[in-house]
Length: 197
Image (cartoon, rainbow, N blue to C red; front, side):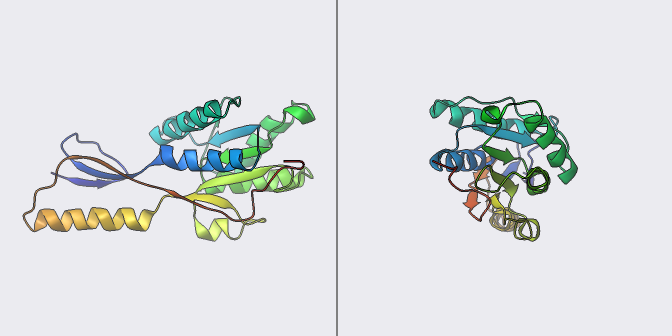
């Protein structure tokens, strides 16, 4: 068998991937636990399977909490798209209809969202909370306020894939299939309870 990280093109292979749906659940549950009720989702291109996995989990968690799920906004994996998405979310809606939280598909999108919100005079995290995905520390920690983000545990994923490869080289069998490794939420200052929440 062949060992892959982040993909499984061959059904007979061994693949190590992050639990993207589980990571999305962590982010949306965090918002719900803080009292956020109008949670938007801004993510990357529709051509990526992880975009659909995360969007499905986003919808499921909101349904479990009896909250409406807006249609996810899909675009590029970039700060520019995050900035553009804020215009789509805030320009055509009344104050009570705008999101009080934005779950972003990666940290770059989240940074663009945060910059655009600040430019509009929207307070973070008081008015709107933001969560990213990747926990790219150089971005997450430099963002103002520092970004809460889903960590995909890439070091663990790489280590597990490497150990599986060493086992194969050593003559041990490895059952084919996908091994999903859990994500974790790294809480920083971009989230908080909404006023009165």
